[in-house]
Length: 242
Image (cartoon, rainbow, N blue to C red; front, side):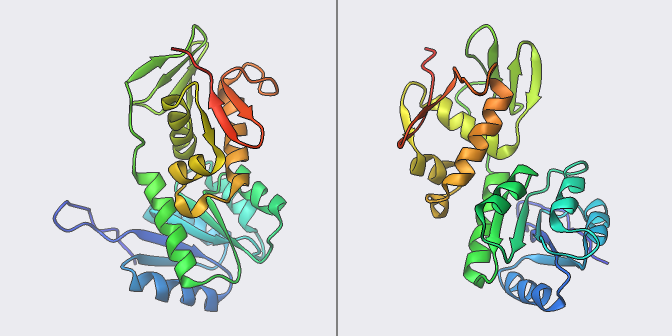
């Protein structure tokens, strides 16, 4: 049985990672490399066991294969997001962008294509944990954009027509960075580096997807945005409301 050790400032507990893959060899490969980096690892051979492990141990991050028997990674992720916001990195042998978009659309935080090196895996895990754990700088507690829209930076929520809407951590960081630069065009690579990390600066599909997420939450008509504007071939700009 695995127990997460309570964390304290003098002796922080190792991060607990759940590895979900039907191939025992892949689980051993990930376990060996991540334990060398000081992480604590638990394993599941399918999605059903993974959901049980998540309920029991509340891991800090999940690394999960897409192609699994009985219940694939996409279906497992869909059920997982009904009970948990734990960061998830998906593994797949496919490199098609549509598969990446499907996984990210279901709530994955990152996507790694097999085969991958230990260095790439460690880099991605570090980046995802960093995004999940580091709050973005807060310019002020509640910011009123206009009579329809305001942002509660303390609670990571947007308020649209009086209704509070929760933001996922990455959505919050992206919106925060855009608002801090309101009126200015922020280039694609700058947003990717600031929100996801420097190693993601060429992963433009992440940015397109999360811009769409934000527009669906804050725009009255996402097809004709008035807050988050596209500067074609350059980047994005939040409307100047000052």
